[in-house]
Image (cartoon, rainbow, N blue to C red; front, side):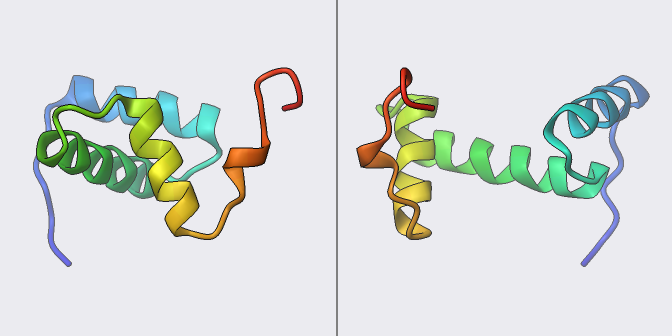
Length: 70
């Protein structure tokens, strides 16, 4: 584990986003980092496709859900 220096504005955006997503600031930063890495290594996939793939890998049955059911 280490310390990452980020700009004050980005830290404020993390703080605000973490309140919306019910994550700690560190968990929100980790989420953004992971998603960013996945986006960079899978440039042809959309955010939704990446999230669906990650949820499926975690065992969440997202294929049976639709927007109208959620």
